[in-house]
Length: 232
Image 1: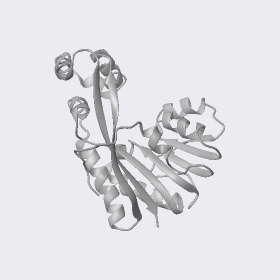
Image 2: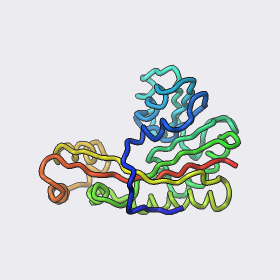
Image 3: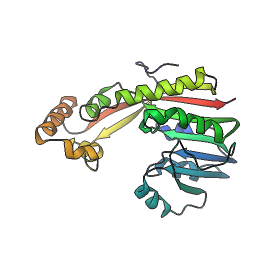
Image 4: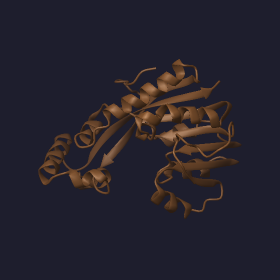
């Protein structure tokens, strides 16, 4: 297993990757579902899919409940304390969320994932890489390098300790488009807790870095690593 890959040849929307997986007639758990955008895509494709989507944000959880989608059940819980029975799910997804778990709870989260998976069940964990122009721009004010290293090391340790078998590890990149700096600001700075800590001078520096990438509309590539773990 490796933390980073510099030369990524696969450029694709992650949803297309998900639909190559055999998810029909499966009980699926998503941890850290956020706004449930991926949850809804998984639920609406294929057939006979039961989705359980969890998040720790109570406000977002209440918003998700209002979606009222028949084959999705929303739960308020974190990966380190999954409110499900042992060996009760076939497939687990974590999209860009594992590194948000506090370091001291990462091993507990992996233990919980192992506990609720059925024998030979799979856990799909995708994580953003700390490389590339898009990352360089965002990390200027929101640096998650150590959190992503901690996440990788915890996942790798779970394989080395034979809690899981590494079924597959691969890398891909997704194209990200910003119409202008205001669009970038809306997507990455506004509605964040960090917004209150960004001074006018800092915002000007961020804007300057953005403009170094191009005037107006900018297309960037955001790289990811996927680890698919299988319960022994």
